[in-house]
Image 1 (tube, rainbow, N blue to C red):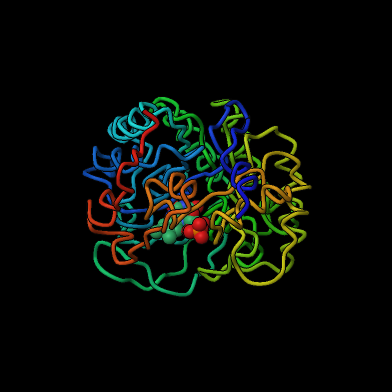
Image 2 (image 1 turned 90 degrees about the horizontal axis):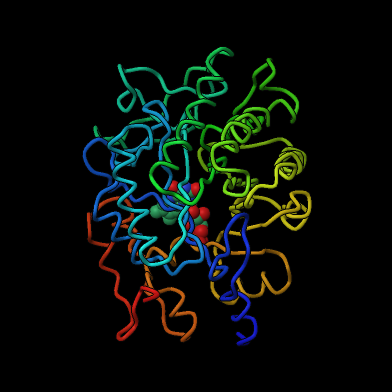
Length: 363
Ligand SMILES: Cc1cc2nc3c(=O)[nH]c(=O)nc-3n(C[C@H](O)[C@H](O)[C@H](O)COP(=O)(O)O)c2cc1C
């Protein structure tokens, strides 16, 4: 890679209300290490502190309500104790001059009765089941058909997103990322493979994007648009996700989001089929974070060619707390250990090595 290209990746950038020290973002990574009451802990704070040299950290997804939970030990953002747990994390990252957004999340149909309160069915736009299994505290369970949200229930879920943003602010986050990607509730509303509603939230692209629009409009007054990001994944096809016309669905969604002056649009670009992400970036018109399989070379090239303003790294940041120093020194990267993605406490979490003599802090 040319040094000039790498300089671009490591150059400061204005994103919404903040100036970030570089354009390398830590992508959201669920790690299933929350403590009692689904609270972030001192261990979780240490993990994020180690990675505070990222231009921006986007946390693992955090459920906005008990109903929004799908997996064991994911941290929530709807109780006093959860706010206090996240405060440990924001303090640790800020002590290293890092910046951190909370990813706010409702899993929709990707849950199970055994995870839900009072054995309730998970909710979704429509009663359409995703194929596959889900890992729960009671072992692997086959996904069931969810219950379709009633029209009158939708404002309550939108309000849970607003409250989660209020709580994120109390916990000291610099902003929030609305998780509208990867087959979870908002994505289930966006795509016609999971949304067959016949009311104002289904049918046309405008109707399917209405839920996201309402969530965005509920969250903006809390932080200001310049501290709110949105994540999309137009061609992600896991969890039985599909859409008959991703170009139309996500083109409309990006234009709609472009009206608000948001901090950024964060796009997970991996999946099936061709898709013109440059056009998506153009339709949004604001700061664009690209994600999915990037290394330093590809990231720098994307920035230099203006295909992305910033790039986020998932597994590379997971396994390399000093990722930026490694990029700078062209040093070898550690491999991520899949077995400890969602278990292992400090193992495969806070014990990835840093280069000798390199500090993971800015000092
Ligand atoms: C262990 C693991 C957990 C993940 N958790 C989340 C999550 O909580 N929220 C989210 O939007 N994406 C999540 N992702 C997707 C990543 O953010 C990212 O899109 C993916 O790893 C591809 O980027 P990469 O090639 O740089 O790793 C997760 C990925 C992995 C490997």
